[in-house]
Length: 257
Image (cartoon, rainbow, N blue to C red; front, side, top):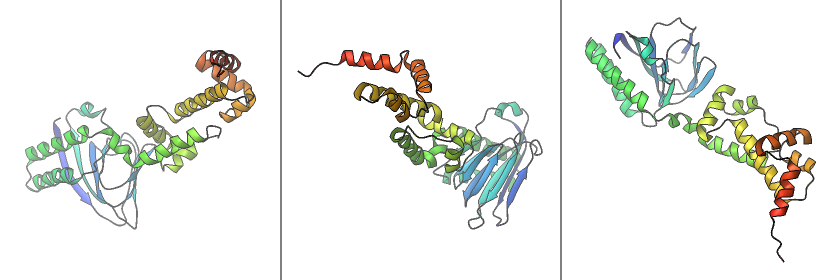
């Protein structure tokens, strides 16, 4: 990764805000939060900021940054232009470092190299920062959400009959629907919709095997508005109608006496 231009910067300004239209900033930026709070929106994805957040910004998306006026951010960043921009085309846009001290030292080394006007050293420290950024575990970026995601999954399991609106769920996580779906999938391996459908299927199967409830009642308990929607879903997932599945289960039961 050979750079043509590298420039270190930092800011801690109470009135700071940021807005860049797509394609209006040259090169790329690694932008790190050393302290404070706020929000950064890249395209349609909004990130709530805290110390340890680091972003790779390629300016192909609109960039908006705001900070908590009561807790202004301390930010360090490095702007750089590459000879071959395609080499970073697939880089992730966010990582979070629980232990920021080492990354902060790398940024400080790059700042010192800039003060000495030593381009080769700046390039060496930029490469070190990039290596740490790429090596960071992606799961770290969802750590602040883990507890709430676990709680949401338990809510799905306890109340599969409820109607859930993806926009309201995302709002509760302070992010866009697209970003909410991504963090849920990284946490549980499937989208929220697929997870809920799995819970509803398991609920229906258990009620068909172990209760005498009518099929219509089971459909409602599993979150379906009518028996026809439920039957179509159940047959698609199991290859059997709810009635056939229940009858098959009864045939397999062993009498207790």
